[in-house]
Image 1 (cartoon, rainbow, N blue to C red):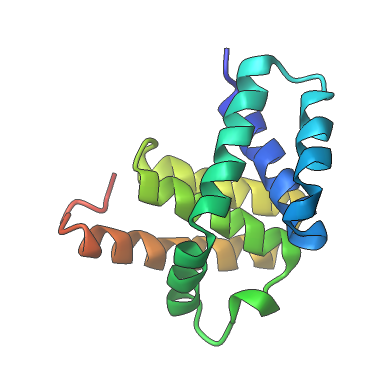
Image 2 (image 1 turned 135 degrees about the horizontal axis):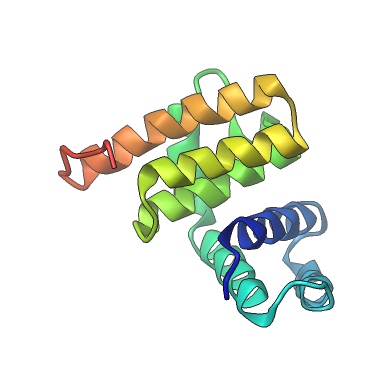
Length: 143
C-alpha cells in the first residue's frame, strides 16, 4: 500500500539532495531511497514524484517565480524550494485534490522548516493554485 505522505517526504528529501548535488547524484539518491524501510510502492511513488518534478522543473520554477513576491526561487531556502516544487508539480498533474496538496506541503514545511516557512508555502501555493486553475480555464479552484 502506498503511503502518500511518506512518499512526499521521501521525494522532498531526494529533491533536496539533488538540488545540492546536481543530477549527477541521481543514482546515489535513488539508491538511498530504495535502501530505506519504506515499502516498494511508496518508494516507487517517491521516485515518480522526483522524476516528475525534474522533468518540469523549469516550468515549475517559472510559475513559482511569478507567485512568490520578492523571492526568486534561487533565494528560497533549500527545503522550502523543494516542498514548493513538489507541490506545484502535484497541482499541475491534477491527480490529488488541490486542498490535499497544499495541506501536505504545509505539513512538510512545519515538520522540516519553521512556522514562518509554512505560512510562506501556504501563500505561494494558494497563488499558484489560482494561477494554474485560471490557466486551465477551471473556475473551480476550490477542490
